[in-house]
Image (cartoon, rainbow, N blue to C red; front, side, top):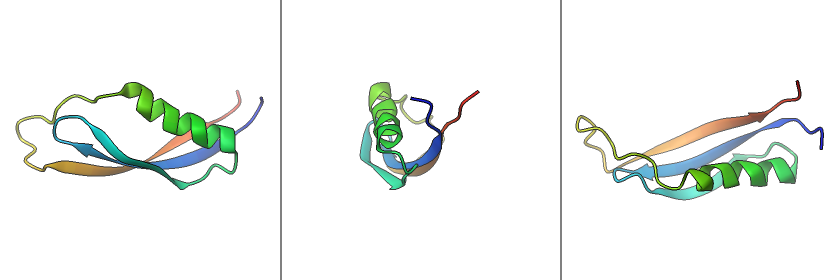
Length: 70
């Protein structure tokens, strides 16, 4: 496919490791890369529970997922 780009993905991670509100906040400009970014987060499934020192019910993240040719 030889495509490059960066998709910015937002999601909320609950204290028990469940992902919700998963969405693209900035497209890579290439639909297949954006879809692959969403799929990558979904594939993780459930994240580890928060450590004891974190007393928040959830944390919102925005992460870049970069696709670059080498």
